[in-house]
Length: 286
Image (cartoon, rainbow, N blue to C red; front, side, top):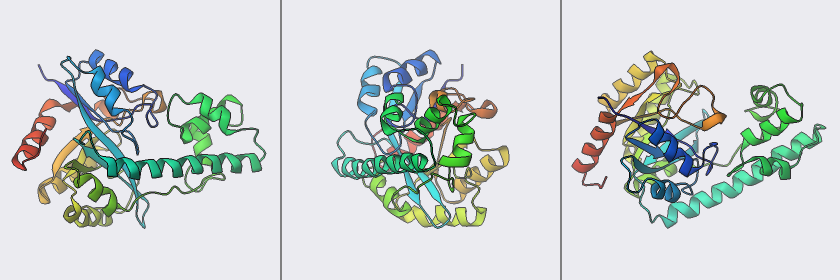
């Protein structure tokens, strides 16, 4: 019987709706062999997720997802197999989270200036964990300011929206280097979702390899078959490991289940086994 995994998931430690413990429980219920917990800019969900999996058949891989700024826009970088002790990374992530909190408050102020009766207290009360734009959008829906969360992002909270503010993030080189310096497998997450020019994107992959980029997320909920084939081609061309995941966020991303992405996406266990073999060949622990 084929076993499946999910190497890209989010909990309430960032912008998911499942707590880390619930994430592990749902993975167990889904029959997954392993998950990677890859919250945005935090390691806060890793300890409770790993503890919840102790003594169980399911494996939890310690990870995170970092945002990076380029002239084209954002790139997202996944780090897998992070060590338990990473004070330098923790300090950098704490600084990014402070900036994100300032950004959230700034967007709420812009909404207030636009005439919306909304405040950070009610946004924070709605969030189970880390506060993000989805929680602001949900308050706007609950108060009848917009019809749904999609409208909130399109008109106000998304890039270029009336209340949007850019977020402070790392350079791609810094993000990759931070994770690689800890011995992580560093993967470019969902490379095609932003619609960047393919030639530019391939150049970015090539340029990040000397900084420690070691893998590419080939299988993702937002990749169409042609994009998956292209990611496979780049992995072979540049000798990169291949990762894959649903990008599960719970109810914040309808249509994606833990271990089952859009379009029937499922990631077989051998993807993880090949990554582990690659790490062992590099002399890295799994």
